[in-house]
Image 1 (cartoon, helix red, strand yellow):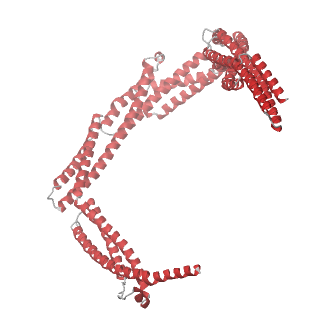
Image 2: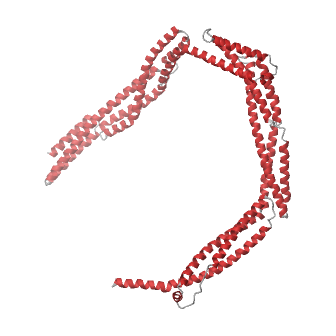
Image 3: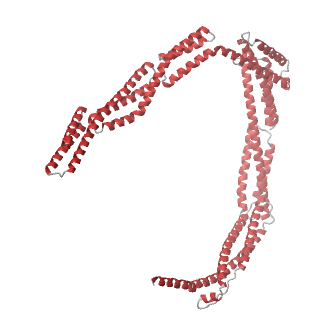
Length: 634
């Protein structure tokens, strides 16, 4: 019965909603649609009127020529076109809204029963009006943007005034750059000065046009002049930057060439090779100096960097020729000094003859070296001679190196062995090992090209290596011992503390281990700072003794702790056994008193074992506790 009443109640609610609330909502929605239609139609009319006003304001800028005004006009035109398209679409959409008339019956349901098609029309009108509302908002935004851009056109002179100030600063920077180039020695700057004056005149034209009561045509002409000034300034900045870059690159080439010339002249004027300087190279260097000090700077002042670069290149070729000849002559003299008369004598003689022929030809040249500069083959021959001399010198070095290879190999092996040991523990220079090593180095220098001395040197090195290897092995073992103890001691001390707890008689072992650990830290620090073998050997012995002492004390501690813990565990097991036996029988007052007295005795002995100062006392106390526990269990 209750379910039937519930169903009837739900059906009644649905009927009320369908008959009363839903038709009333549709009636109200229809009237609201009509009001919104009228409101949006009025707003559309207002937008049309405002669009025409914007178009009329924009028409005053139609004849402008400057890019700033043209861009602004184009942007506003684009906004107006978008607004027009949006308004046309809105007009079409609003025309499609039907807004049917709703008759004033007593109940709205009477109308919608009579005209059921109006239900869909009212809902469709509501959806369409929501869309047109959004479209109207977008149209208002577009109109606002168009007005803002139009206001920007009106305020364009203020923005252009700011740009004019920026351009004036750029012009001042260009003037500073021109002055800087002039201070760097560049004289041919008339074109930059002339173009700067043109840009200044264009900026002045804008200043004259920019006045509060100036006509639009005058402002447009000023803006056009300002744009031309911006183009001119950009071109000036690019040209000035190119000029600075070319000048810096040229100055760098000139500086390198001048440095090479100074080095070449220094070889001829001073140094160990000055006495053997070739007189034939002097005219070459004089000609190069004239090119670098006179001709190239003159081209630089006139901004003729290509011609100046050609002078620098020519001077560089002359310097290279002089350097090749000088180096070839030096190598040839060195080959003569080290020639053994057999292996390379023929090749060295051919090199000397060809070099002499080339120098004779150069000696017949003009004083300023112009012919040498024109003859490209001369530079090539000098370069080839230098290469041949260097190759012969390398071959001669290889022959000499073969004679010294065995001694060098022995010396290298000695150095490796010594460095390996020194890496482990660096010995002082006054240590016997270090003095012996220094004597071996002196023997190596004296043993070159002397077979007997070389053989004795190798024997001495072998004896030294055997003794040194024993020392290095012991140092390595000590380093391993230090690393092992350093890693193990913290854990070992913790283990010792854990093993000694709670036995007071075992605390001395922990203290002793900690003391030996402190001794280890001190000794290993002294070992790291030791620089003499005798001192290090003493420290090594002490470190080995510390390791053995710690191991023996720790082993004894573990043994005694294990014995005491075993006895304590035995006491606990006997007590547990006694408690189990006691739980099986019904205890009386006498048994309870006996049990408590026995437990107090056992606890006394255990605490006495914990507090005992000596291991023997602790062991005896635990044995007594074990006896008492055994009696209790029995």
